Length: 112
Image 1 (tube, helix red, strand yellow):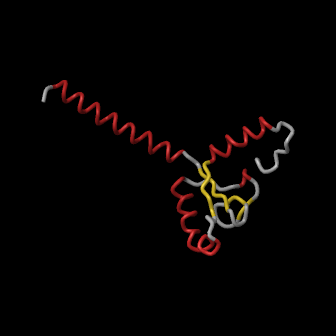
Image 2 (cartoon, rainbow, N blue to C red; image 1 turned 60 degrees about the vertical axis):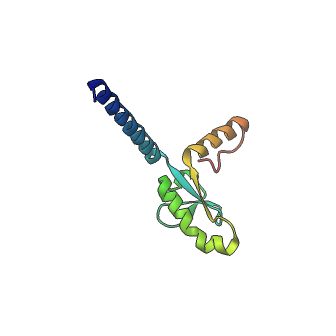
Image 3 (cartoon, helix red, strand yellow; image 1 turned 180 degrees about the horizontal axis):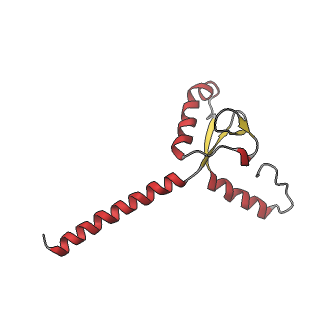
């Protein structure tokens, strides 16, 4: 293998690893909240729920999906619905901003 071919191969490997690192970093940085369909509130980190968005516990994607999956056999099986839903914080913030833009005089309650 020539020096140029070796360099191209190495560059491809590094580029692939950088892509993987960026993907992992992106997944780690994403913050999720868990919405309780049953209680109509956000999950807290330890126990309980809150109606205030600002008090909702942040979770990684993996944590949020795990919480929601573990809830399915109990409440979900009894009532035929998903009891908890993982919601990406960035999506909530986007919806909040759209809501505020559309309804300028609307109360801030619930979006705090």
